[in-house]
Amino acid sequence: MGSAYTSIAFATVFLAILFLLHFLKRELDPAWRMISEYEIGRFGWMMRLAFFSWGVSVLALLITIWPSLQPIGGTISRWWFVLIAIALFGAGIFKTNPITENTPNRVNTIHTICGAIVILTFPIAATLAVRSLLHNSLWSAYQGLLIFGIVLAWIGVVTYFATIIISRTKDPKAGETGHPPVYMGWPNRFNVVTYIIWIIIIAATALRL
Image (cartoon, rainbow, N blue to C red):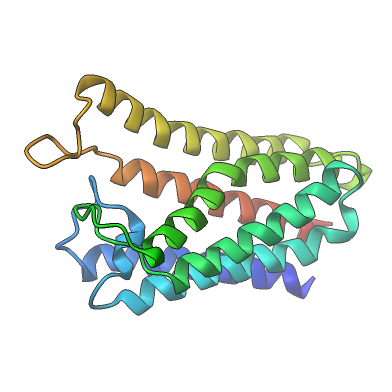
C-alpha cells in the first residue's frame, strides 16, 4: 500500500504549503483572494508545487483504489480522477491572473478551465468512487467514514458557491471596482481542504484494509 502512503504524504504537503503561504504572502487578503493567486509573484513556485502535490496525491490514491472500483460507476470515476489530476497539473503550469485584473489571456483561461474541472466535478467523481467502493464488503465496513468524507466534500463546494451567489444577490456588481469584494477567499480554502480531507480518508481507509 505504498501508493496510499504516497497519497497521504502529498496531500499533507499541499496543506502545509497552503498554510505557509498565508504567512509568506500577507499582501493577499485570504478573505477574498483565491488560493490560485499565490502563484503570482514571489513564492509563486510554492503554490505551483502545491498544485502538483495535489495532482500526485490524486494519482496515488487512484492507484490505491483502482482494483476495488467496480463497473460502471467505478470505471467512470477512475478516468474522471485522471482528468482531475491533469487539471491540477494544468493549474500549476498555467498561472492565473489577479482577481482584480479583467484582461483576458490564454494562460489565465486555461487555468480557469482547470480550476473549474477540479472545483465543480471533484465531489461527483468522489461520490461515484465511494458508491463503487461500498459494493466491496471490506470497504463497506467503513461506510460511515466514507459517507462522512463525501458529505464534507459536498458541503465544501456548496459553501463556496453559496457565498458567491449570496454576495451577487446582495450586490450584482460585487467584486467590481468601487463595489465590495466577494468574500469567497475563506470558502475557497475550506472547499479545497474538504477535498484533501476526502483523499486522506480514502487513503487511510485503504491502509486499514
